[in-house]
Image (cartoon, rainbow, N blue to C red; front, side, top):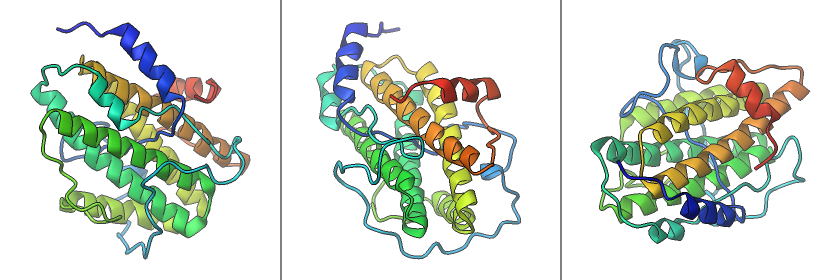
Length: 259
């Protein structure tokens, strides 16, 4: 078992504060994060529907839309993909390899859903999330390239997936979020709920310094967005019941400062 180079992680964490970051969605296909409940808390009777056109996907850092505040996570720590290469190569287990492949696809799914929600509702929280998720897609691609693992995202077009499992997930999630702004916020919160659960799992199953730094970065971003979504829901008299993490963990996250 390799010992995590704490000093390197601290240095990288300082660099993270200059950029954006974001969440992911994890389900099926590879690692099993979360179990028991229907996808996103909805029953199977909810028919997928075509989400319609989505806006241009963010490919570079952009200034957050609208004022930063309770309804807008603004900037968050970000590790630029080139910093992945500043860590030494370390042995990659089969579990770690599968996790990288899974996370790359899940980040695309989360980004594409956020884009569709922004295109429909024009709320800046979705735009910021999409930008953050694009950064994390780039981080995952850098890790795949570093360790010579084939990229599972052959087509970067929003809503297009090589695996029909992800196409079905995308259509189902977007169909739910298109019905109302309340449902869109609930979709966003559930994405972050699952992201945080996934990050807890991933950080417990890797000892590679570069992977740990990326996953810690994703965790901080997802916690920011969870506070944004749940804060907006509560401001409208709604509440969010976590489906994957515990109520205690969500309460702790809601009390944390922006990162």
